[in-house]
Length: 290
Image 1 (cartoon, rainbow, N blue to C red):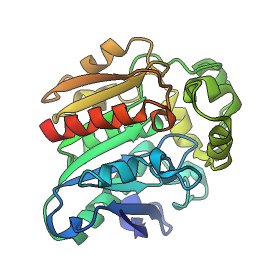
Image 2 (image 1 turned 45 degrees about the horizontal axis):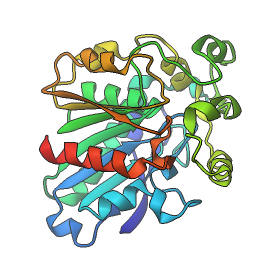
Image 3 (image 1 turned 90 degrees about the horizontal axis):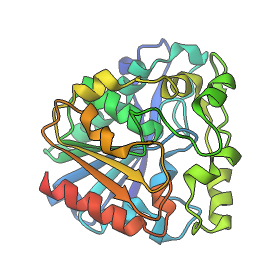
Image 4 (image 1 turned 90 degrees about the vertical axis):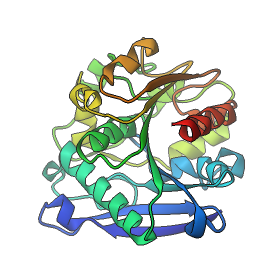
C-alpha cells in the first residue's frame, strides 16, 4: 500500500471568505493508478479523523485502508472540514452541514480529476460521517453506491448517555471535545484491548458544533436519505446507534437497492472489533456485486 497525504484547496466550494483546505490521504494498491477500478471515499465520525481508517497507533491488522488496498481497492480518507488537520474556520458559526458536504464533494472531485480516468466510487461514512455521506450523496450525486456505517435515522441510542444529555451540553458555536468516557460502552466491544482504547481516545479530534447539533437533531437527514438513488448498504453492530436496525433501509425510499448488515460481536467502532475482518469482507462483497 502506498499512502499520499495531501491538502486539497476547497476555498471556492466552501465560499466562507477564508482559505479552506481538506486534509486527505489517498491509499492505493501497487499499480492502481494504471488499472484500478474502485475507489472508496471514507468519512470518519465525530471526535475522529481520517486515522480511523488507518490508525498509526495500532498494528496493521486494524487498518481498513490496508485491507481494502490488498484487495485492489483504493481508499481516499479525509478529515471532515473543521476536524483533524482540515481547516478550522473561525468563527465556527460560518459553517453549515451543506457547506461541509460541498467542501467534501469538491475535495473528492479534485482527486478524481487528477486520476484522469473513470473509477467506480463508493461513498462510506461512519457515525456522524454517515450523516455527512448521506448529505453529500443526496446533493452531489457522484457515488456508484453508498454505505452508511453506524448512523441511525431511527432515534439514536448512545451508550451510557443519550441525545437529551448531549444536547444539553452543546454550545451554540465553536469546536467541541467529544465526551469519550460515557461513549466507551457504545464505541468498543469488550474484546478491544484497553491500551488500544486509550490510544484511540488520545488521538481524538474536536468537532464543529454545527455538526454536533445536526447529528443530535431527529430526522436531520431523512429527506436526503429518501433522495439517494444508488444502492445503499446500512451497517449496524451488535451494540450500535439504531434501536431498530431492520427499519433503517426503509428511509432510503429511492435507492436502487438496500441491504442491512449486522456486525456480530462488535460495537459502534467496527474497525476495532475482533470481528472487523468479517465486516470488511461483507462490505467488500457488497461493493463487488452492486
